[in-house]
Image (tube, rainbow, N blue to C red; front, side, top):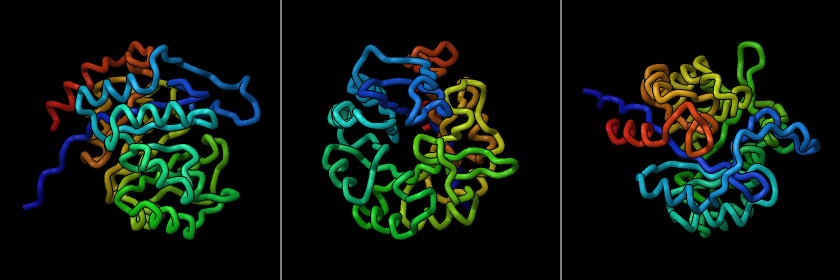
Length: 262
């Protein structure tokens, strides 16, 4: 008899921008035009505060994302606060990946590095996988919807790459990594609901642990994601969460949900 699939869980995050913990509307992060940036929240606490909070509540599988330059110090402070338990993403390459594991990351997360000039490079995927080992590599399959399909979005979600997100591409990536992080860039930071169709498709496609991020606005979204994905996909909350200035979701409720689900 097959082992019953577990429930979808809440996975925490720490998004860094200019050295501060922030929550940003994903589609507004433009490299060449800071005036278009829409920020939902800027923390008064340092990154290490959130890492310690996650440790205190045994919230595993969280990710620290560096959104652009000027975030290395804050990222290292978060990793040092709970070494071996947080993943790191943003500017990770085959050349610097080991350095981030040495700084305390449990795994490294790559996106843009795999797509030089917006074209997928299997050689780069192999290089970073062999640099850190498959077990310590996460591929961030950030994507944007184009008609009835999803295409990988890189460079702060502004550039559309040549890879369609689907069973074939995810199976290929899964040969070299141990986990997926999927940002639905079109709904990221809007608190207007998850991309239900994408979550359902991920449930059909993925064969390794996967965390979805984008649009979550209620504790009940955990049950929704669990139902849509048959428990294969976990969920990150950002701008809707009270610890990030949100009013829709209480951090305490997510902790309780996880404890009951585990």
